[in-house]
Image (tube, rainbow, N blue to C red):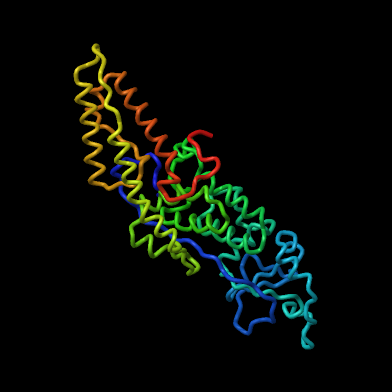
Length: 345
């Protein structure tokens, strides 16, 4: 289950799943003497290039790789070593170029699935991608200069870590459907890698609201054994932002202007609004929430005691205060002001 956006100020915290990190570089080399396992989905008998990641061999087509990646196109443009003298027609692997990459086979598989026609992992056609899929595609797409793949991933993240309050409030969950709260750490790192700083305020907000100090420090380990950890700078941002976001929530609670009921209003309105204020302040002190956008729910009895006019005034006041908090979110999370940050689309 993901963290729902329409949370109360006392909602419980959920633990998270893992994420991925970047890898180094690739090189063209002779076949490894280690035992290789052909990938069950991305190994074609008539393939014209062998790619080895870890102990997994992918056999694909040179033209396919070259058409999607300038890096692979450049590598494959170099003359390849001649076949070994003992190569036979039954040993096709010794007669085709071999590229060894230092990426994990799990991450590299995600990249190949996206560019291989008919494979099972076409990213944006059906189900929502997992954080590991997005992280693998962004990092390896960045590494191999596959700009279209990176752009699709960043567009997906931008919908779930938006610039406008309208978009943020329209979300069903604070994180994408196949993400968990700890995956916000990965989103911060991907934003730093690609320069997509507009993702940072909401990602840092999620880290501050739902992750413990231990989770922030330890980061997230993913299925391929890699780990996403925050840089010292971003870790400090999160710890500093926790207190600022909590103060912003307290300010919003305290400034919910209890309306002075008109003469013809029910006499219980004023006492009801004072009770709403006192209950919210007490809740803020108990939960230490770091979410200035949390729903402030009055009890059914208190809400019933308000007349329609006073309830409308209270809601409008809260809307205004939430909008002011959104305007300040980049500053509250320690992020520089950015173009396009707004309340409405």
